[in-house]
Amino acid sequence: MFRFRFLPAVAVVGILVLVGCAPTPEPSTTPSSEVTQNDTPSSEPTQEPQSFVGNVPADCAAVGTAESRADSVDQLNLQGDGVGFVRPAPEGATLLLGCDWFAGDTSGVLLLISEVDPAAAEAYVATLPDQGYTYVTGDAGNPVCQMVTPNSQYPVDTVETITSREDIWIYSSATNIDADMLLSDLNLQIWGN
Image (cartoon, rainbow, N blue to C red):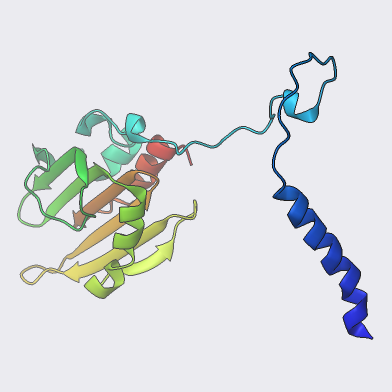
């Protein structure tokens, strides 16, 4: 008895499928004043992937906010532009901004912001736990990976943080400095949330 209840529904679905596969009739050469649904433009916008490269700060003095820089890197010396540092990043990553702040023997922040292919970034993030990183999902649904390594000579830790979203990859290494506020402000600066 159950089999026969579904038979009409299956027949309707089959007819709809066949109608959907029917060839489109040839257009008429006589003008028509009828307006059809196909003549009205779609009101649904098509979603293009958005690039956030334009929101990356132009230089290290513009990273985050004045408050977050004062809280973290203003007491350090800007040593370089991050070029030459080899840190975890997906293949094909292009460095957009690098900042290497350092002071004394044990205090420093390295910040590398790169443009990446979103699919390559997603695949690379999946490998980070095998490299010792913990993985959490950020507030915007993006991955945030972190690894804390004690310094072998001094009683300080190095906190490496990686976050990826759309076409941006951020790597931060902070030793004896709390860079959380700087990274939080940088996220707002680039993505707006």
